[in-house]
Amino acid sequence: MSISFVLFYHCSLDHDRPLSKDGKVDAIKIAQKLQELNWIPELILSSDAKRTRETLQIMQEQVVGFSEAKVHFIPSFYSIAAMDGQTAEHLQQAISNYSRNDIITVMCMGHNKGWEEAASMFSGSSIKLKTCNAALLEASGKSWEEAFALAGLGGWKLHGIVQPNIRS
Image (cartoon, one colour):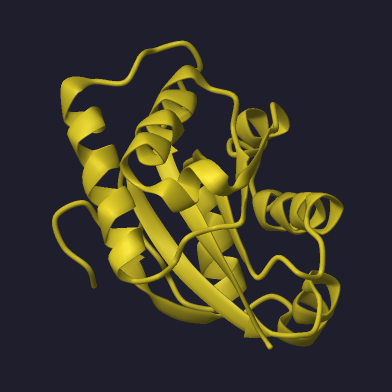
Protein backbone atom coordinates (compact mmCIF):
# COMPACT_ATOMS: atom_id res chain seq x y z
CA MET A 1 0.00 0.00 0.00
CA SER A 2 1.24 3.49 -0.80
CA ILE A 3 1.11 6.14 1.87
CA SER A 4 1.40 9.74 0.78
CA PHE A 5 1.63 13.11 2.29
CA VAL A 6 1.56 16.65 1.10
CA LEU A 7 3.92 19.12 2.73
CA PHE A 8 2.20 22.41 2.06
CA TYR A 9 4.31 25.48 2.72
CA HIS A 10 1.97 28.31 3.31
CA CYS A 11 3.91 31.34 4.43
CA SER A 12 6.86 32.54 6.40
CA LEU A 13 6.63 33.11 10.10
CA ASP A 14 4.19 35.90 10.96
CA HIS A 15 1.48 34.35 13.13
CA ASP A 16 -1.28 36.97 13.10
CA ARG A 17 -1.04 38.53 9.63
CA PRO A 18 -4.13 37.93 7.45
CA LEU A 19 -4.03 36.34 4.01
CA SER A 20 -3.44 38.74 1.11
CA LYS A 21 -5.63 39.00 -1.99
CA ASP A 22 -2.97 37.12 -3.99
CA GLY A 23 -2.82 34.49 -1.24
CA LYS A 24 -6.56 33.89 -1.59
CA VAL A 25 -6.22 33.40 -5.35
CA ASP A 26 -3.26 31.05 -4.85
CA ALA A 27 -5.21 28.98 -2.28
CA ILE A 28 -7.98 28.43 -4.84
CA LYS A 29 -5.49 27.42 -7.54
CA ILE A 30 -3.52 25.04 -5.35
CA ALA A 31 -6.68 23.32 -4.07
CA GLN A 32 -7.85 22.79 -7.64
CA LYS A 33 -4.46 21.45 -8.74
CA LEU A 34 -4.29 19.01 -5.84
CA GLN A 35 -7.80 17.82 -6.74
CA GLU A 36 -6.80 17.35 -10.40
CA LEU A 37 -3.84 15.25 -9.27
CA ASN A 38 -6.05 13.27 -6.86
CA TRP A 39 -3.94 14.28 -3.84
CA ILE A 40 -6.86 14.99 -1.51
CA PRO A 41 -5.98 14.43 2.15
CA GLU A 42 -8.10 12.50 4.58
CA LEU A 43 -6.24 14.16 7.45
CA ILE A 44 -4.95 17.72 7.60
CA LEU A 45 -2.45 18.78 10.24
CA SER A 46 -1.99 22.54 10.20
CA SER A 47 -0.22 25.38 11.89
CA ASP A 48 -2.60 27.59 13.84
CA ALA A 49 -1.32 30.79 12.18
CA LYS A 50 -4.05 33.10 10.86
CA ARG A 51 -3.03 32.89 7.17
CA THR A 52 -2.74 29.12 7.30
CA ARG A 53 -6.24 28.81 8.77
CA GLU A 54 -7.59 31.21 6.12
CA THR A 55 -5.87 29.25 3.34
CA LEU A 56 -7.33 25.99 4.57
CA GLN A 57 -10.81 27.51 4.77
CA ILE A 58 -10.57 28.64 1.14
CA MET A 59 -9.32 25.20 0.08
CA GLN A 60 -12.25 23.59 1.89
CA GLU A 61 -14.70 25.93 0.15
CA GLN A 62 -13.20 25.08 -3.27
CA VAL A 63 -12.81 21.30 -3.02
CA VAL A 64 -15.28 19.11 -1.15
CA GLY A 65 -12.59 16.57 -0.28
CA PHE A 66 -10.70 19.12 1.78
CA SER A 67 -13.82 19.86 3.83
CA GLU A 68 -14.31 16.14 4.46
CA ALA A 69 -10.82 15.68 5.91
CA LYS A 70 -10.27 15.55 9.65
CA VAL A 71 -8.39 18.71 10.70
CA HIS A 72 -6.11 19.32 13.67
CA PHE A 73 -4.48 22.69 14.32
CA ILE A 74 -1.09 22.14 15.91
CA PRO A 75 0.45 25.26 17.49
CA SER A 76 3.94 23.73 17.52
CA PHE A 77 3.92 23.63 13.69
CA TYR A 78 4.46 27.38 13.83
CA SER A 79 7.45 27.40 16.17
CA ILE A 80 9.16 24.19 14.98
CA ALA A 81 9.63 25.65 11.48
CA ALA A 82 12.27 28.05 12.80
CA MET A 83 14.35 25.32 14.47
CA ASP A 84 17.14 23.82 12.39
CA GLY A 85 16.82 20.11 11.67
CA GLN A 86 13.78 19.42 13.86
CA THR A 87 10.78 19.78 11.57
CA ALA A 88 10.95 16.40 9.80
CA GLU A 89 10.99 14.47 13.07
CA HIS A 90 8.22 16.66 14.48
CA LEU A 91 6.05 16.05 11.41
CA GLN A 92 6.67 12.31 11.63
CA GLN A 93 5.59 12.30 15.28
CA ALA A 94 2.49 14.39 14.55
CA ILE A 95 1.43 12.18 11.65
CA SER A 96 1.97 9.04 13.74
CA ASN A 97 -0.02 10.53 16.64
CA TYR A 98 -3.01 11.78 14.63
CA SER A 99 -3.34 9.30 11.75
CA ARG A 100 -4.85 5.85 11.58
CA ASN A 101 -3.85 2.97 9.33
CA ASP A 102 -6.85 3.53 7.03
CA ILE A 103 -5.71 7.10 6.27
CA ILE A 104 -3.45 7.03 3.24
CA THR A 105 -3.03 10.75 2.47
CA VAL A 106 -2.11 13.41 5.02
CA MET A 107 -1.48 17.10 4.35
CA CYS A 108 0.74 19.09 6.70
CA MET A 109 0.44 22.87 6.41
CA GLY A 110 3.14 25.06 7.84
CA HIS A 111 6.00 27.44 7.41
CA ASN A 112 9.50 27.80 6.09
CA LYS A 113 12.33 27.22 6.57
CA GLY A 114 11.26 24.04 8.30
CA TRP A 115 8.88 22.70 5.67
CA GLU A 116 11.43 23.04 2.87
CA GLU A 117 14.04 21.38 5.06
CA ALA A 118 11.67 18.54 6.01
CA ALA A 119 10.67 17.88 2.38
CA SER A 120 14.36 17.73 1.46
CA MET A 121 15.14 15.37 4.34
CA PHE A 122 12.23 13.02 3.58
CA SER A 123 12.98 12.86 -0.15
CA GLY A 124 16.76 12.98 -0.06
CA SER A 125 16.62 15.77 -2.67
CA SER A 126 17.19 19.48 -2.35
CA ILE A 127 13.68 20.93 -2.47
CA LYS A 128 12.79 24.60 -2.71
CA LEU A 129 9.29 25.58 -1.60
CA LYS A 130 7.90 29.03 -2.22
CA THR A 131 4.72 30.38 -0.67
CA CYS A 132 1.68 28.22 -1.44
CA ASN A 133 3.76 25.29 -2.79
CA ALA A 134 3.15 21.66 -1.98
CA ALA A 135 5.68 18.82 -2.07
CA LEU A 136 4.00 15.52 -2.94
CA LEU A 137 5.74 12.63 -1.15
CA GLU A 138 4.98 8.90 -1.14
CA ALA A 139 6.28 5.74 0.54
CA SER A 140 5.15 2.14 0.90
CA GLY A 141 3.79 0.64 4.07
CA LYS A 142 0.75 -0.92 5.69
CA SER A 143 0.72 1.85 8.27
CA TRP A 144 2.28 5.26 8.76
CA GLU A 145 4.72 3.83 11.29
CA GLU A 146 5.79 1.15 8.82
CA ALA A 147 6.14 3.68 5.98
CA PHE A 148 8.31 5.94 8.14
CA ALA A 149 10.39 2.96 9.28
CA LEU A 150 10.90 1.58 5.77
CA ALA A 151 11.48 4.88 3.97
CA GLY A 152 13.28 6.65 6.77
CA LEU A 153 14.80 9.98 5.90
CA GLY A 154 15.72 10.19 2.25
CA GLY A 155 13.53 7.30 1.10
CA TRP A 156 10.26 9.07 0.32
CA LYS A 157 9.53 9.41 -3.40
CA LEU A 158 9.03 13.00 -4.52
CA HIS A 159 6.19 13.08 -7.07
CA GLY A 160 6.62 16.76 -7.69
CA ILE A 161 6.12 20.26 -6.42
CA VAL A 162 2.70 21.77 -6.98
CA GLN A 163 2.64 25.53 -7.38
CA PRO A 164 -0.35 27.81 -7.99
CA ASN A 165 0.71 28.58 -11.56
CA ILE A 166 2.80 25.54 -12.56
CA ARG A 167 3.62 21.97 -11.54
CA SER A 168 7.23 20.79 -11.68
